[in-house]
Length: 373
Image (cartoon, rainbow, N blue to C red):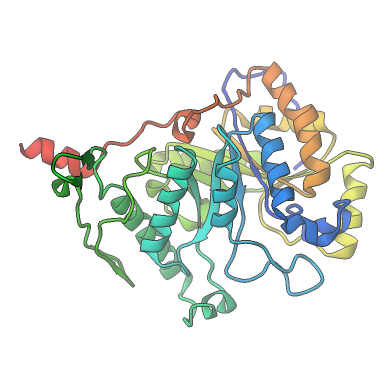
């Protein structure tokens, strides 16, 4: 995507997320990170990246993942599971949202819902979930299954999101009573079985943890999954601003509260972004993700984000090389957006729903009980 300055600034706030997987979004990022290849997998590297993103004012950090290692060549060959990385980051932060990618097609739905509820408790209400639907033969071989047709994989993702949302509601907010006199920890009448039947699985609740602090963990769904009505945030990977705007409008029409554009960035640093990308691609070509891609100076990215603000609620940035691009974002891009009133950092202690402007959902079982009383 090219630099698109505008003469018509908007007062619309733009929520900013950043992908913090490994050394960066480019597969050859480790070659240009300035640190030993194994260091990207260390707790110290993760701690630095999350701390820097939070201090800069990002609303959300996401952590990519997949059933298979990211590469079978000399590029990144492994990673800690994204949920583990997010849980580790939860205790080091107090305002940035944390969103691991968990794959509905290869993860048992009950365990997935439990892990995310636990993350929400650990982070005191800052958990989110990037809904994955890995569907390659190798991905499904990790659980001894055959890959479903694309439509079936999308149905699986929808079923898992629906089941997770039911499970998060299976405990009412006031289910835990801690009544010392009677020795009761919870009121069993406020804990519910969900008995969900999907196309390929069944779940009989309740969850083994109390309801998440947010009520419902924030669900981010890639637009390609076509489950907009089940998502809190739809992630749009279209190559240009007009296509992004059209897809964002379709997401909202389907019932999604928020739409985020996906943007890969290769910024001018010690060398121009074009030269940096050429050096990265000379080692390993960057596969086409269909996302928008910005290459160039920080001021051009600011102009691009400004131009996207009327069409989307936020942007998830994918730095090509974290140790190079993230400092430029922190030093030049976010402050410029803040100066224009387009960017506001989350408040310490705020839940992710509060930061995103999303209401805390009522518990469906409590609502049902009150309407029949």
